[in-house]
Amino acid sequence: MAKDKDLEKSSISRTQLKLEAEKLQSLGLKLSALSMSKLKALNLPSELFEAILMMQKITSNSAKRRQSQYIGKLMRNFDAAELNTIMTFWNLQELKVKQHFHNIELWRKKLVEEPKSINDFLTQFPTEQKLLLLNTIKEAIEEKNHDKAPKYNRELFKLIKKIIEK
Image (cartoon, rainbow, N blue to C red; front, side):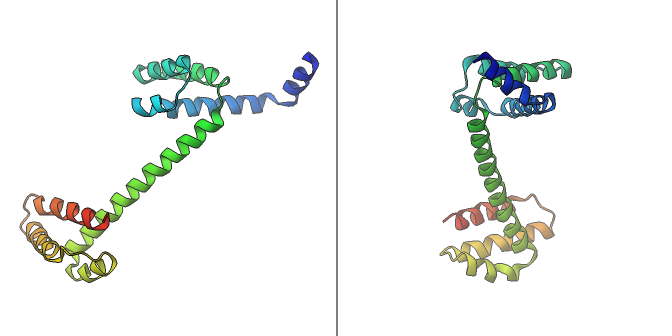
């Protein structure tokens, strides 16, 4: 039995072992960037959880490097595949939220700069608040032309968001 383990370990090169260790350290760095609520949701072993919390408090670069190595060592005993899946899912969710926000901002900018694009917007997102939308666009354009504070631009953004999310 001991010979089987030795055979299995010898078939993996040192380079592969180093790459795996670096991947675990990288994952540990990503974990240390997460919020407390997400960390708690992962149900990490207490020792690993504490090491990640410590990593968040460290400011020195060399200390961070040592702590990431320690986290990588602790993660060798932990199934990182499931953790990677969860992290990928969260990253995709964040990306979707950013794209949605970007889409709303593009519509706001387009409606202010090209008022005739309102027809495209209403075709794509029919709404009963057409009059409110038109008035808000008018006020936002006036605001832009007179270099006023962007009050109506913000209101237009909120209105577009409300219409799109309906």
